[in-house]
Length: 119
Length: 109
Figure: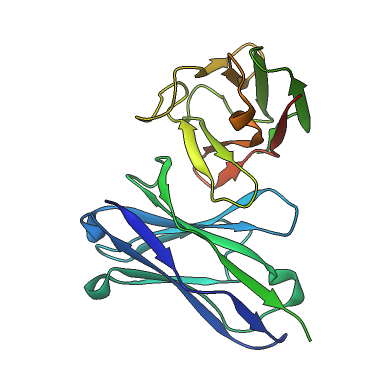
């Protein structure tokens, strides 16, 4: 069974750093893309970026380029989303999702990680 | 580019609803459109991919289409059930970005 399990909820202060994770199982992890999607409170979905764990090829949405970093550790079937300096506006639910190609649909989704940034 | 959807649609059980997704620039037909369902408090799931393909397990009450004349995609849900009450998002891409639509709340009266 394909599963994407995300790390737990985080509460951080503005200016702090954060790395959240998404661990895949039940499939050949290195052969599928993993994307990240943001959903701010009460708002819609936003495509952030995507990585191919096989070679760490990464593409970012222009809206998120330079704001976050996406990385992967194929040896432990895990993809990461990282911030170096959080802002209150980063408060959101973050989903990881699997795709068969860089433009393919997301066929499996993680359960989401809620990030709250507040002083 | 942007993908614009109606904010909300409502209909009674057993009826049919159609949600539009209008692309602001670039051809709707060239890049695949997917549709995602998000029930309250849950992660999204795919109901349509590659314009009109249904993943296994998605009932055939869900169908997708595109209309090049209006540069839009549509998701149609027939035989509406209370379990279909959710937010629905279209999604597509171009060479520079991947975009989700603005989202449509479907209410089953």
